[in-house]
Amino acid sequence: MNIDFSDIEYLTDPDELTLKADYQQFLLSLDVPTIIDINGKNPDKCRVIVTLLHGNEPSGLIAIHRWLTTTLPEQPPETNLRFIIASVEAANASPLLSHRYLDGAPDLNRCFGAHCDNEFYQRAQLIEQAIKEVNPEAVIDLHNTSGSGPAFAVSTLISAKGLTLASFFCDSIILSNIKLGALMEQDFNCPTITVECGGASDEQANEVAFSGISQIARCSSLEHYHQKKQVDVIYKPLRLKLKPHRSLSYSCHNEGYHGVTLTSKIEQFNYGSARQGQMLGWLDEHGLDNLELINDADENVVDRYFSVRDNQLVCRTNMRIFMATADKKIALNDCLFYVVNLPGTAPL
Image 1: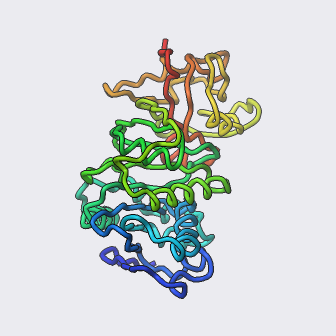
Image 2 (image 1 turned 60 degrees about the vertical axis):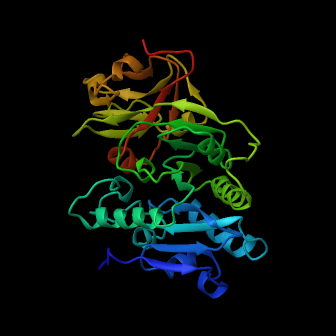
């Protein structure tokens, strides 16, 4: 596939013909990253919503298309809105909306904030520029979780505006200091949050994205908005990763596989807490040496959070688990899941 990494298409107040009959036809009509500008009642303010940084996370696109075709014709937004549809080529690769990124290409949401001699880093810079040129008062990056789970937000800074933005979508926000090269980590001189709307195959995730966009469009002032629900702040998760050249499997039972075997029901832990002693899978003779959990001091603290019981991988402390996935490719290339201690507990 020949990709022009310098090209971005701009659409302003697109009509029905441009938006097509459904989101799939609209996506297929796009060749490059596409910016949709919507004129609002107050043209002095602009809010930016980004989607499809990962081509297999469709809830943002589905919600944006639904809002443009059902709500906008009846009710213009309070402020200008800029929608950015990012990884169009990956999303359009067959089967549609199944590729996180193109084969052989880097993850676009790991290419921000760096100036590498690579086309995808250049694309990330173009997206950053497209955000900065409207001097936004808020940036929201819509994603789907890699496994099934409830919606939550993530930010590198907690502020009143950021909590307001999160409240449009969910009831919890993670304060993260993990640096991955993600869009959320960049400084746009305004609150910037990522929203994990839920699993890509969960219909509720589409509703979360649509409801959030609708509320943002109707909100005349982020400074004076009275939150309808409290948002809990969860502090500084760590990423549990497999060490290089270690094997990963999933199973309902201990099959004696090499490396790490996670329970095939690992995604169920996204919906609640994992208590001390909870079994998450099985380990080979290398035990916890298969895994790494790096803290702020660049130390591997996996043995403070997990232990081995016989050959079972078990929780050493009470914790919450986020983004656990049974998608082996994502787990290997990104992480197995995120963990954070429950309030009032500490790793042993």
